[in-house]
Length: 375
Image (cartoon, rainbow, N blue to C red):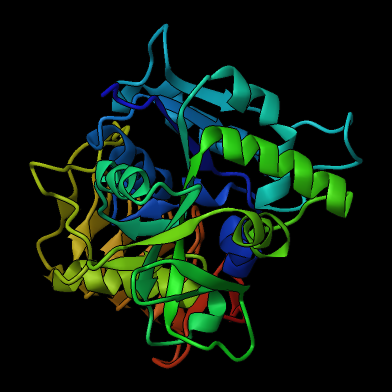
């Protein structure tokens, strides 16, 4: 039996508005993860470790902030003449005004590039989640079940309404899909990893566009269309999975990294590949206190750091205190400052004083202003 040709399509164009100041001036997938990685590294590493070497990266919002890091796919050995990583740049015109209005619309606008790949299967993945998944297992489920669409699912007991909620029958056939419903019927959600039979996806995009006039997000058109016309099944992800799309979730994921309860980032059999920062090792001063924390290359710690992640180039001065926080690249926490349950943006110069109160997550922007974005 011929091995199917698989194309991976990474959706990396969203503005990430739920993350507030952290993504006002950068693409969400370019955001740091656990000190030396970026969110985009997770999905690309899962793809290449699964044996897929034909990848399309769809960009839209502030693409330059992602392009420098992706570097034509070099960190993932995807810089090649045949297959490899191709960036699909944002564009307007032809089929509508403005940029893409959602995931389905983004695929519609790039449908010709997807068709040119001549793939048998197209796996579409978002770029803002933390997990480990061998996509060849998803392909096996898709082929074994003779599916038109296989939805990767997981159980989220807390607030499934923030996701696409999936209903399945006893044999794993998807019977319903509701995108971010107010009153979800189940805690089973879509991980935003979808394996399509390529011909079915391309035909369904054409049909859904003809029916609706314009496309939006998954739950508005494409998936309901396939539920009515095709065979849709689930592939259950039993391990760790977290959506990092809000400040609370982004912060919580880092606490789980510190606890060792997140997806393993240093598994030698499944490492997270990345373009690593070219900086000196971290420097810890004589009077510094560091406990249960991650220190990134180029950071300097002279003060107190507990249960925190200090990113490349960040400075914690003597007399400063950082507790349960994430301090992003080149930010400075001065003497006399205490930050707790905070996310400090890139390059921020934090003022002396108390920031955060140990309850809701506080985001401190690059100008030093504090925000509590709605989750």
